[in-house]
Image (cartoon, rainbow, N blue to C red; front, top):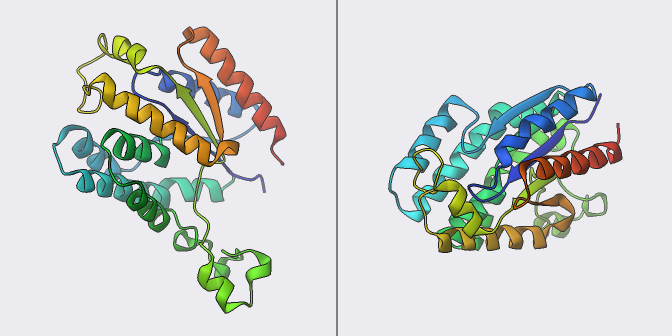
Length: 240
């Protein structure tokens, strides 16, 4: 069966990423793939309710982070994992990188705590990929060694590719000034988005092979061309 692919799209508000996701969907469909379009926070009825709370209600930073991961868990269980199991392509507008960027960078929330929540929510074993399902959560050379099993971290559900629309916060602010009525994140000052951008860069530095950086300060048409080029090259390199 064709392997499922998980592609996420990230960037600060005003980067224009959402505009290009439909083009990527068309590109994947042209290759004969079934595509699931979704977003975070959101993607399920419950997660959409949590999204509305996160975007519009004032709350403690830990509460905000917990709601983000609660919505993500529901999203993974109900939408993302089943679609990947069917061999489909999941295109998601934001995922965990956004939580590290906005809650970790913008809000200044503890990075290690976010990492603990990430490991809890995205643990592939808890998502049904344990040894009973024909998938070992540990490397082959660790099997049979109690010590190795005790010290190995189970793998997490992470995107196969993350397209990061990188944009200077001052340009973002100019674009958002003419946008719709902003939510509580979009209305933040430039300094907030500078911290968000720095956190995205930190996530890219941690797993550079997963990220494709797009210069979102370019014109919409040039950004679109870059996205199509990156995705075309990446899809051609994927095993059947």
